[in-house]
Length: 73
View 1 (tube, rainbow, N blue to C red):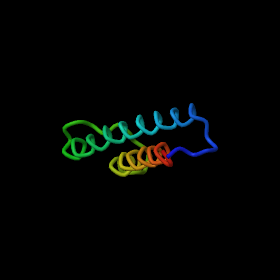
View 2: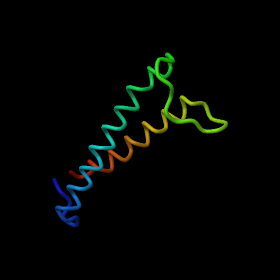
View 3: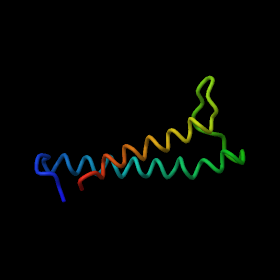
View 4: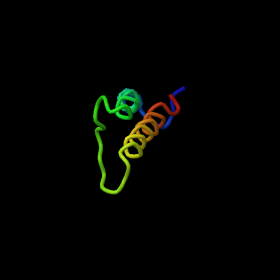
């Protein structure tokens, strides 16, 4: 069910953002075990933070954006 206050074009843009964000989260999620096993190096590194924490935060952030994209659709 679409929100009455949002035009149809914005709804489609929001859904596209949600789909792309969900796909990106799946890629990062599949990358996690490969990075833990040191088959593939982790993508993100921040000074003073464990690489696993940063990578997991990227997955959670993408899922939050995807939830916004699919909200009220």
